[in-house]
Length: 155
Image 1 (cartoon, one colour):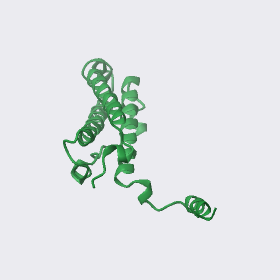
Image 2 (cartoon, one colour; image 1 turned 30 degrees about the horizontal axis):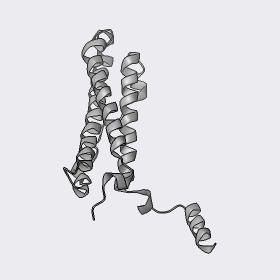
Image 3 (tube, one colour; image 1 turned 120 degrees about the horizontal axis):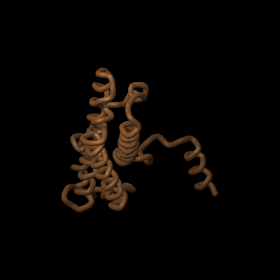
Image 4 (cartoon, rainbow, N blue to C red; image 1 turned 90 degrees about the vertical axis):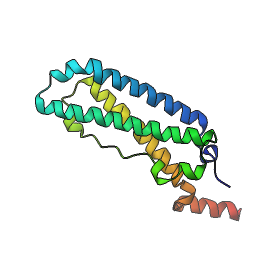
């Protein structure tokens, strides 16, 4: 029998919460990079401006990967796709470029905050995905847990 989202500790409430967070962040990023960040960008040196443009694309990419992944799990929770399909490699969280913290030091504070927020959200969803695809119970048990298990069985 296929596992469902709730059997893997990925509840509909968690998915919906992350989805709302991702959509709000996407809207904030769009507003910043299209409106508020334009003036700040124009004050940067040409080389820094290129890095700024690259980082704005990375922010957008991270967020869109998260949204696509969450939509897959929303579909699984709603019964629109089965758990096996949701776990296929093409449904995994897409790779997103990493940010060079030293390169972003010259960016306006608003851009830096969006970079940090998108990276944080992406990293949390990445950890969640790893837990779902390779749950801890399938991973090599820790020696401490093995000892606790033996003690429980002995007494």
